[in-house]
Length: 266
Image 1 (cartoon, rainbow, N blue to C red):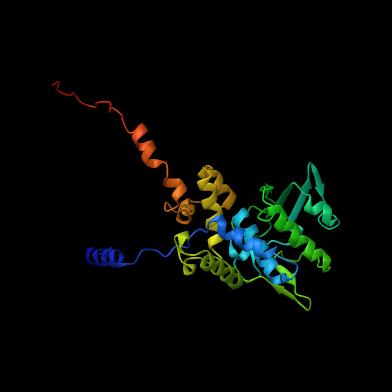
Image 2: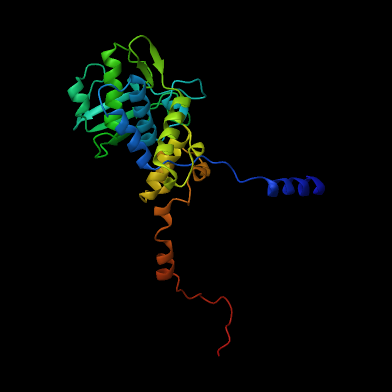
């Protein structure tokens, strides 16, 4: 490259604003959304479906095109891609009773044509311990809703029936729900509503695993990142990650270098 162009491009880079990365969302925001979706019997099917898809995207580190009904370079997960287990017994998603689905102890998603997924690969999760924010609870609610309305097994999980017609949970609905929850919980979260979107959930799941000290290679496998692109989703602004670093630096920062040349004696 010509030296003058190189200098010009370098100058542009220095004057550019910092990259606008989506912020990962704390679990408290997701808990708030799931609690509202279970508050009473009058909650709309749209609200319940949106909350369930938010939880599923969080736990499985999904892209918006995989958990919403929208045209994208990837395809959404369908009811036939879900499999429940009750102990060691595999349940038939098409014929399992509602009680069996709600009592399941393990759930899996099978990758078919999703982005960066190996066709036929299966990823699974157990119960989270929460009665509302749990991958099994959310997936079983989606499957039960589709069963009750006689949906075929190829129906996307993000589809819901509002009493008159079938509709899809959209990325804009996910973004709106997340931003309303962030606004309600206030500025103590450390970011504004405009900083989050439907793409934040993938970063949120990865960040939660990092804060739990899960190995980054495992996070990369779970999120199907094939390069260090994953690092763009992780933020050192997360307080639990940085909390212990100063103490660890003091405890382990006393060291002696092995000389690679003759050192004069005092």
